[in-house]
Length: 484
Image 1 (cartoon, helix red, strand yellow):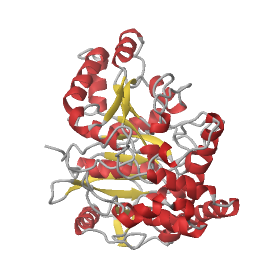
Image 2 (spheres, helix red, strand yellow):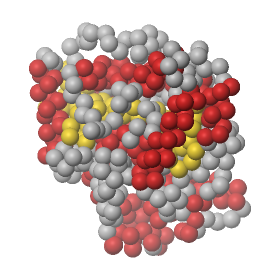
Image 3 (cartoon, one colour):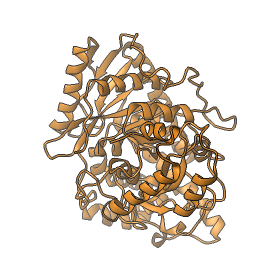
Image 4 (tube, one colour):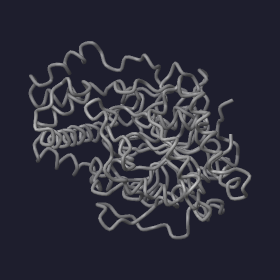
């Protein structure tokens, strides 16, 4: 499969035109999307007009077609519904800084991909659009919340697609779909304007790719210092693509763990993926030692759900003000209703203490990185769940239905229980969101059931270049898996 920069070369030499690439992308969408349900909105006429009228030759990506995630990656006058029935029909009144950066880089936005309602799930099955399916096996989920993006890239509709990650939503679908998924350092790629604290810095926008050089090129065009952004990261001025193939000079000290940070089971396949990586790294003369990080994973996840609930309550308080009515259970999916209801009973002190726990975890990881440069784990504890997997029990669903009758403590426990089965599948990704560190999923393992699995490296803040170097090492030694 050609990567994005392969197509850019053909655009630069006029072997292909942007119009031809867009026509080809829509032919692939027409072929694959009826099964995969990855793309939920298109703008073919507008995209073709841009391709024929914009001056693209002096841009890095020269008219490459691009699908944005249908959640927060706003293009003016295009849908902005949060994958929610409540906002169906709503259009964006401005273009986000993230999409502005894409357009400046020479991408042409051709549509939007599917996501779960408000991005709360690690699978993609919104009631508004229906479930997305995994291109490796459509009986399985591509993950979430960037599940539509993962299906669109892994099926070849586009070589690169927009994604975002508030708890693993880039890395989880990357692992489930055989892709490269980088979550940059907090503040590296702010989405803006007016949304500099997405999930209090836990959420960050980037992309899903099929090659390390595409990942590096994307980071070059998306890294920015926004004066208004809540979080700032110094620019990597030498350029990620320029330094991608440099020899690794630093003798990385690498810790690895096979244990779930929340004490849940980890499949042997996920362990085997990491152990194979450890063996390869030792062959490459890296110092690798088994060592779990010091963070209390259970407490950190509870703090994460406090943030989720609080942010949901704040979002809907504004919605109620704008609509001039109270929202009801019928306005949203049950999981969203549970978070909304719980968030209304969370005190400012509880919310502040939850964020303080993130800061403590960041300090612990900074100390950990004084001994170990990189931290290696499975990306997910198992391969993708089936489309029809029941991730809540009948009893849990009943509890969610009457969550407004519960005490504050009972509500928060219900939220934890609601996510229990899904968290057990993907317990490794959330910590980097809360500490602000960069983290990457690499597609190195094919499980016996024919589905891919990823391994995850996490680096100190600002060290995306270390993650890219590790990715190139695995890629050059043919350790990445590819769909037949």
